[in-house]
Image 1 (cartoon, protein in one colour):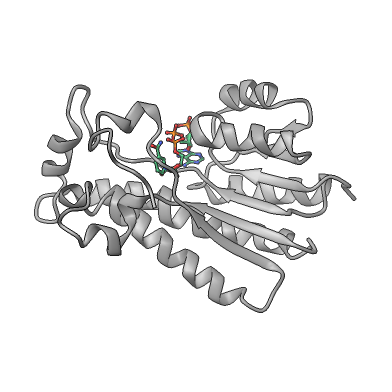
Image 2 (cartoon, rainbow, N blue to C red; image 1 turned 90 degrees about the horizontal axis):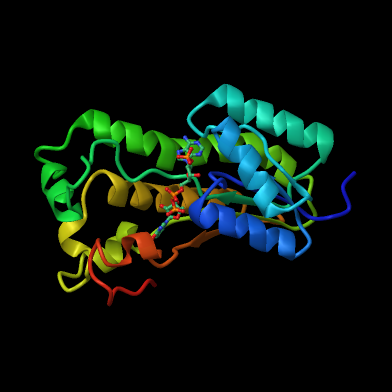
Length: 222
Ligand SMILES: NC(=O)c1ccc[n+]([C@@H]2O[C@H](COP(=O)([O-])OP(=O)(O)OC[C@H]3O[C@@H](n4cnc5c(N)ncnc54)[C@H](OP(=O)(O)O)[C@@H]3O)[C@@H](O)[C@H]2O)c1
């Protein structure tokens, strides 16, 4: 059985997931750097540090989720932290298209259902599928945490306010997928209320690659 606390971060080969993985290693965790891409996961694991492992994990692929869970059970015996970070924002935003143009082309009245389904497959069903597969491993921990990475653009309360910066671009693709993920998180919290597994949602601020292009530099997260 592993002495270090064990964490799995999905979509950890770049961006926020990669940084979370590095921070967890710095705090003494053994980190599983989840990544769907073979090359990127090797490079990310090296960058994260020597006590990191890198399971192939595509959150839309049930077989890869099951294989990752089996590997964690065999090698480490349990999970203490699961960070559901992997997400996509769209599949059809053309190069050069502004976020505002994309929002106009993905309103409830004209959005492609395939676009909605594909993004929700990762951001909503992927989170639920990983939760189901990893929960038995989290139950092996004396104090486990699930952290679902959301976004202020998914908040119904905030986006109901016309003055909220992302109010006008609230739409059925990425924003509503984060709303649905928040709902799934509440359902998980309810299910696990009487257990030692805690469920949390975090909502990062926009990183530099979005900060100025989406809704302006004055946006602040909740
Ligand atoms: N960046 C922001 O400003 C911001 C703000 C608020 C919330 N968030 C949230 O923070 C999280 C990370 O965002 P980010 O900006 O770091 O995104 P990112 O740089 O685009 O990274 C997303 C990660 O998810 C992975 N991924 C996508 N689909 C996957 C799948 N089917 N299976 C496994 N991994 C998959 C990507 O893998 P590939 O490299 O293979 O594509 C990548 O590693 C997301 O949940 C996002 O919604 C981000």
